[in-house]
Amino acid sequence: MPDTVNHVPYDAHNSEIIMNIRNITKKFPVAGGKFLTACDNVSINVRKAETIAIVGESGCGKTTLLKAVMNIHAPTSGEIVFHGKDITKLTGEEKRQNYRHIQMVFQDPTAAFNPKMKVKNIICEPLLNFNLIKKSEIDEKARELLEMVELPGDFADRYPNNMSGGQRQRVAIARALALQPEIIACDEATSALDVSVQDTVIKLLVKLQQERGITYLFICHDLALVSMFAQRVAVMYLGNVMEKIDGDKLDNARHPYTRALLKAVFPVATKDNFTIETLQGDIPSPLDMPAGCPFQDRCYKCADKCRTEKPVLQELDYNHYVACHYPVTDEELCR
Amino acid sequence: MLLDVAHLDISYGANPKPTVQDVNFTLNEGEVLTIVGESGSGKTTVIRAILGCLSAGGHVSNGDINFAGRDLLKFSNSDWLDLRGKDVSMIFQDSGAMMNPVQTIGHQYIEYIRTHSDMSKEEAKQRAIDMLARMNLPNPENILNSYAFELSGGMRQRVGIAMAITFHPKLLLADEPTSALDVTTQAQIVKELMNIIKKGGASMIVVTHNIGVAAYMSDKIMVMAGGRVVEYGNTEDVIKNQKKPIPRSF
Image (cartoon, rainbow over all chains, first blue to last red; front, side, top):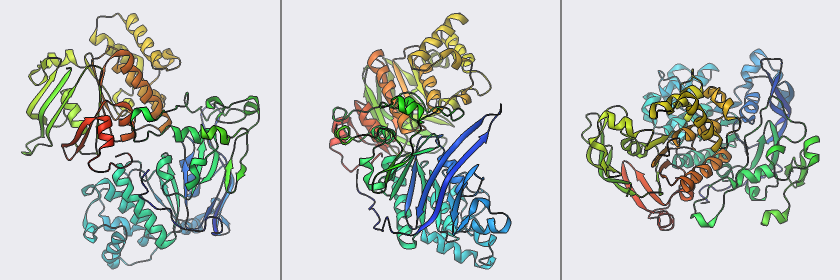
């Protein structure tokens, strides 16, 4: 892997914790009186100026967790403590003011904008909503924000459909930055982009983080990509966090599911030099969660204990948590 | 030689400058060619031209496409109907979008089989079940009774592949067959596609932007940028002797 993006030097374990996501469970009611468990007892600490990547297959509850953080829907149980308050219980004006501190960048930059608004109105709308600027200041402020995301200031008078996907995603980042939030939640913010464009967008995000100390919650299903710039990685499966590990130690991951994700990436190499190992089957339905470990049906290490007792996150190494009864051993890692 | 594309130019509408310029490649039986490149580099345009289904006023303005000794550019409508879906078939990025959302998969699959052969309904259904089972899909009969939106992305893609290989085509065209899938599902689908090639002896052209997948699957790689071929050669040569460094995927 080319070291195109450097790891940001920051104090990983002493940095101030700005958000506590505690035991978030979200169940959606479905027809027939059943419940779909999207998030199951998820806890994550978010430190200042770090990037937390949440990785997993589609349907594993990544976006549901992010929506709870964004206060788009309330969790069934659990709390999200931010600035000493449980933000899931906020209402009215207090809830609205809270949005100033957490902003979001979406997956599809085409669908994220009103096509009939000019770029300058798009990126200044949050500022107008909170009465932070006057209408006469829009032009000036828009230029400033566009230059921050390395776009020419003249783009202020364009419409979103006159721009490429990468440029539009930069506009989305500018809009998220407008309110100077502490946390920016990126929901697969680079998945819809070409890989070469992905690279430049990631570099921009890292640069902004170093300059302004922004925290990113970064949802992604590409482990190779997040290992290049995320300080912490949380791997989710079927609504559960399976492993929490430092981004640069990802090669040392111990959960069989994380290993499977790592092995499923095709390296740039000729055929004879590697083998691809695949997981059998599909992710089970979150409608009837199995007793015991959620990964049991696809795990090569599955034993009787895994079918009856659900593993909890345990600290295996400093800052490395694994929810597995039989984590991968050193010996297996070398094989 | 199965397919020979020479000096191919493709233009859209009245635009005098061709969108795709001077594409040359050949493909033998049982070979896999991958076309890699960024969006807008003309990858999809090239394989759509081979199937004669360029969208929105696209037309071949220069060059030849020769498939199994026949000049595809001189084909009449009925020649195309005979060729598509039997000798040449296509796998799309999202096979769910290819299907009619208000008809069951079985209805469409059986209709497809009966359009291209003179099987009875019962025979066609049995054939569909066999093909789905071959793609490692559990409960093929249930799948025939489902609608496209009821299946997961990986299952839909398997149904699309099963449909494409029903008549043992000589040439399979795959347009980003795994781009919409998770990494784990992607690995499964890529392996299954390789099995088809090994067992069935079909040739395949895969369009992708993931150069890792390209390196794994193909005998030959063609790199496109801005409507032109930048590099073309055996997979090993292209991977080892890059003229310019290729980014992690592309």
